[in-house]
Length: 277
Length: 308
Image 1 (spheres, each protein chain N blue to C red):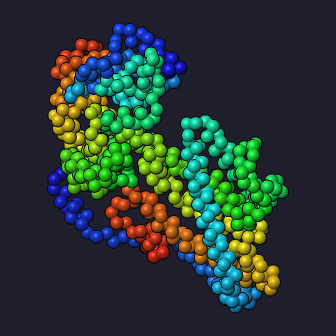
Image 2: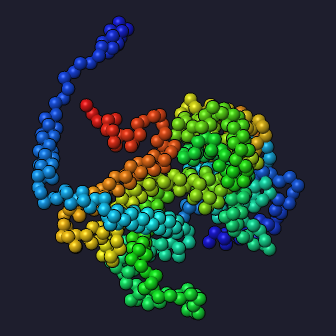
Image 3: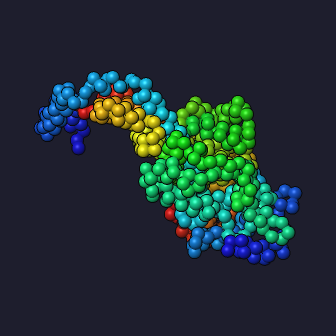
């Protein structure tokens, strides 16, 4: 069972590693030995990763390597089977009390997700709401922000992603690149401390990729902590502080972009880069 | 291709095409057949004296028929309201991660969809034969309020229960299909924003499911309007029973059935119009591209899709 695995893992790790939340300045994301299975298929086989505050981490790798799954574990859209995952010093999905792990209630999980923005490959805008209403929805319903204030916030954010004049359009009336920029504004409306991007440009026509990457670059320059699963090596080279290469559920190599992208140490990483660069 | 031929080809493309259209002799045959059948129908409606249009006109706006019509509409509204509300609850139960709720909903649908509505109506009406008294209190313990079931189950109550509870079983399946039609990504996007399960259902999933739920619900409402005629068997005075009471006295069976039919037709036509309006509202964000002619106009004015 999932719970037993986590407990066993905990007994191994707690002895040497104190909970990182106790430090004065924990990393934004800390992952230790994270495992994820779908039935018998092991998708993540022990992920160790640290993402410091204010940095950008790009995750690259072939499809099916577990990149997106790992991203979805960080805001508990997927449950992990073993290991530990902390966001801002807080254990994801569980609470540790008296040496045991307790599953968190839906409401507690939802509260944690408020502070983590996520942008999806297929945008997932709410098609029955206009661009502005998409951005307003969560602040009004979840943060209980007054509607007038939320409308102003939405206007500012849409202007920031260059979508101010499209605020009253429905997603179906926008191009892919425009939809993705609205999706970024929607995530930012909750004032997240961490942004997760799941292949944000993979579903876009090539000429629309640039406008989305520009918005993401601006966000990185403003000091947002970002984890970006991407195939855009140019973006990774320019913006990332760390690039992580994943394959078959493990992190094969990790390093600053200029090293990993130009002088990869591992054969698998070299083979992958030679195909995409 | 040489550069010289290109402008010439373009020039020819600018000429308007005058082509011989394809002939459709089959269309003319079908038009002729339908025209003859329509003429025969019109002829018999006008010339057959046994239709007794005079009697139809005499009773069409009579007090008894109109109050029957009002009761039919009331019963349709109340039974559908019960069916929709209970149907949404059953659908959400059916999709719940709690297996007991899910099975309970399945069992309800199994029973109420598996027995004829007519039987259910008669059963509800005769419920006092099974339980003479109805009490509210502690289960298996003392009762606080108690009354004769016979006085509670009036023909109207039996009709609402019989029609509404059966309708709920069908509505549950319609709502469930609607909820399942919403892309999983919508759940994820809403959850990632920190929205709770019920909030996601109410604000994100159900509004989108409406697009799938509304058209069959319109059909169900129209069907319900006609199905209410079944409750004439427990002598609830809706439209059909009102007509039956009159022809039981004067033996003008056909004219009075025509009166009832014309009113049913009128009511279902109004409902069809409403259905189009509600569908357009539910299709917000999908159908709002450009200014395509409204469905209502297409329906009543024609044009748009008709080929010359």
